[in-house]
Every structure is written in structure tokens, then in C-alpha cells.
Length: 124
Image 1 (cartoon, rainbow, N blue to C red):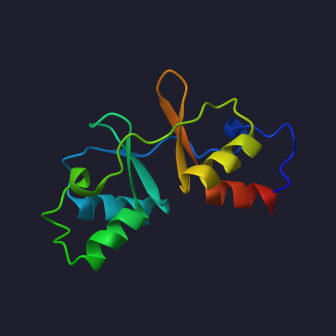
Image 2 (image 1 turned 30 degrees about the horizontal axis):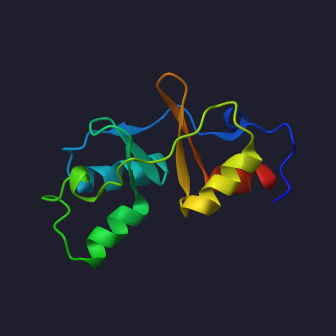
């Protein structure tokens, strides 16, 4: 990966951050991701959690009722986070090491999301 040495998370992250409550129906999360054209939401209740398109796809594949299934039922807990001043090379390495495509950006509070798509768009 050939990102400029000065490229930081703040330069490429998506903001403002889109969030959802843990008790929201998974169907609502799916609709919001579709309508906002994003692939992950930070879960505001649950402490450091995220729900992604992959979580929704897994629920559909498992034939779960998306209206009855909550975000809490499928969210990923204890996600890694990054700070806005972290260099993108480090973020790319973290995504590879942890096998993730999204990292919430935290600066005293959640401020954005950086994704593999953000990295790809920056490189193009």
C-alpha cells in the first residue's frame, strides 16, 4: 500500500458518524446503511460495538427475522478504534491484522469511521 506518509485518519475518515441503538431492529440498521450508502454503524448502547453489512448478510443467510432480530443480537463487540491523528499505514496494518474493514475513530468520543473503502478512494 502506498499511502502518502502524511495521510492521517482525519484526512480520509467518514464523518459525521452514523450510529444506531443496540435495541433497534436489524432491519432498521440495514435500511439506514442502504439509505446512507455506508456499510457500518457504531452502536451507541453497548460500549464499543459496531454493526456491519456483513452482520446483516449473515443474519439473512441464517434466515433470521430482520424485524425481530435486534442490532444487539448480531453486533460485533469490543471493536478496535483509532484516533484521528493516526497514520493511514498503521490503520491499514490494523485492518489486515484484525481482519476488519471498519474502525471507529475516537477523540474523547466517537467522531467518525474509517473503512477499507475510504483507503481505496484515497488511493484512486
